[in-house]
Image 1 (cartoon, protein in one colour):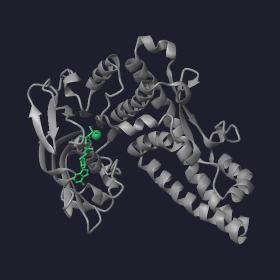
Image 2: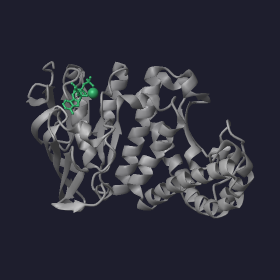
Image 3: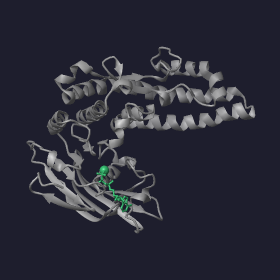
Image 4: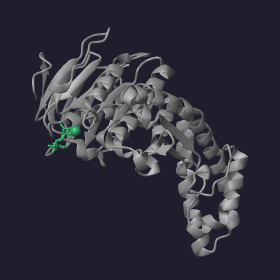
Length: 386
Ligand code: ATP
Ligand code: MG
């Protein structure tokens, strides 16, 4: 899959921008605050995913304007599609696929698969477990509509159950009211847990391989990257019990935890409390890893997702790596660049283009762009300094 062209109007710091994106590899360089990340954000928007920085859609409209838009021609298995997103201060975001309105942004997902790395992702291995669960969810939502449906449903049920727990504790409602909810929750939740458990080993194995490739021989002593999917009831911080996540098991857990859940006013068992933890050999990365190791580890998981999506769809998703090179030593940078040749369209941003030597692929040589205050210029000499 490939974005052939991109047009922005009043998007972030771009007044207008029109780009031919045919080559497979694109490097956007420029000083800080010139619009490199903004450009990736525009591409993300096309996929139907939540924009990666804006809390509200209207934040992406150029300051002082009331409307903005992002338009792209995308080549994919099914042919070529035009995707347009309109942003307005006075109305909800609107998405058009080949000129027809799509009711929710989701139908775009099958067309624009993407994997995104942002500088904030470095915090994933050590931060709250939600970001680590999201690694599995992002992947699974892009390969299975069933999974997306189960996960959305689970989260809805969870909110409703939460309210009920409050009513039981606060207003003395009967605990029996939980019975039907627990049945539904266990049903949706077990689908989520079983799918995550099915996908996790594949992602972990690919990530281990990518990590070894990036970290190289000299890292061997530090240990291999190990990722462990831990169901909520298996986590060492919880009451540690074994269980596969079948519906019956799940329902039983909810029953066992009921009194405690009413007391604490929240649901303690289920996929909203799973983890996908990072280890180097036998040591938890978050306690012993260096910054570079954290970055290499999360990057390896993103690359794993990229490869798995490529196999699943038989075409590469977009890979976007925002400011990926900082904190990586020269060896790791070169190793990463080598890995990026394996296929699909790749977008890289960097504040130091001079440091990047990108080999061509059989599909063509990379395009180097320089960004200055929302204006883009294609460089002929890739070593031209930003
Ligand atoms: P860095 O190397 O620091 O990551 P960058 O090139 O990625 O920089 P961006 O985050 O893409 O920079 O762009 C930041 C610039 O865009 C800032 O100057 C910011 O003020 C501007 N900006 C953000 N939102 C808008 C908007 N809605 N309208 C106009 N300008 C905006
Ligand atoms: Mg940036």
